[in-house]
Length: 285
Image (spheres, helix red, strand yellow):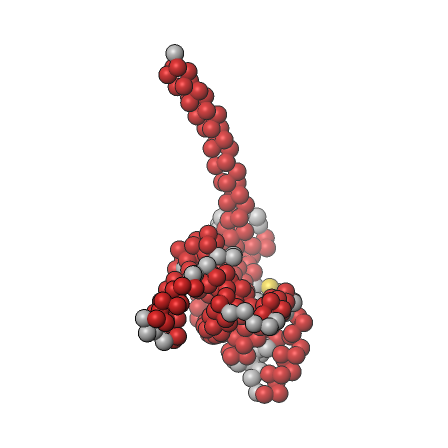
């Protein structure tokens, strides 16, 4: 009697759980469809001609063409935008993480006068909109000869990315016991050797997360990168805002440029996906 009742109760619970699982799957499917719809429509437009884009409504290309991608990959004014963006984004990511690592270690391991106020001041830089600093940066870089260079944009983005990286890394470093530092010093490790050989591998997830967020902010930021560049270092985001000519907006080329702009971010997410997963689980992300 008891075993039969237990089996019946288990069956009843399972029967109630099945509709919940199906409902969750439907909601998740609709959510993913909602997220992927703009990306699909962007790809759909990039494979059409301008006449088809502006003349008819279709869920897929009626006359498939890759001319838009050929234009981007063969026209220097287009593909150099991607090259310029990658140059200053990589430079910014390396500089931001390199500067944030010792700063975050100091905040996580030492207490000094005004440390909390200084940490909050760093975060206020991240809270400010880029438009606030566009004019000062423009005047400063024009005066010292850094206007329209990759390093100018990379250093400007450090104002926002370094505080973010410090905040992320400090949370990871605070989770590492201080006894590890003391044990390494007793074993004869210098600070540099300890930091690179022992400490950095322990916070590799945090470094990956910080690098990911620095890369993504610098890649999608438009205002500073457009204000501080003109020709030689003009990024793809600025190039995409200047597509209107005598014949109107070239929608197909613009859509193809948008598709190719997504690719670097997708590749970064793929290569650091494990670090990002650990970072969301362990760090302050």
